[in-house]
View 1 (cartoon, rainbow, N blue to C red):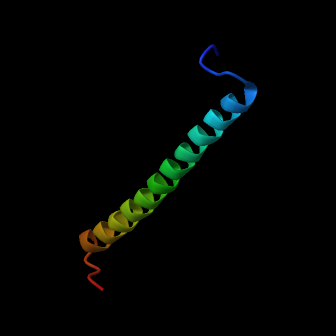
View 2: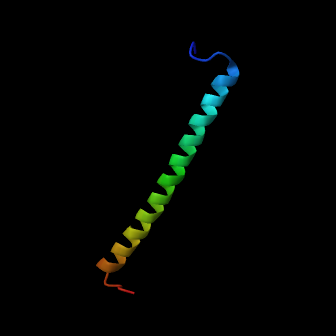
View 3: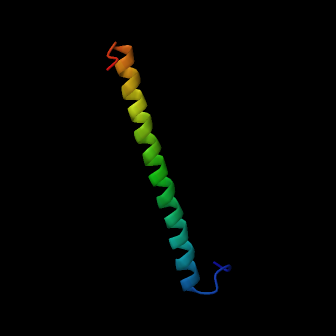
Length: 51
């Protein structure tokens, strides 16, 4: 806490950190959705549904 001259600085740092976490979670969500689509496609191929 010694690194912050006031509570406002601490709040700003926390907000910046949360913003970065939110952005990373959005990217992870997108990647997981793409992975799910690939898994669905692989399942179709393994079952012989090449449509």
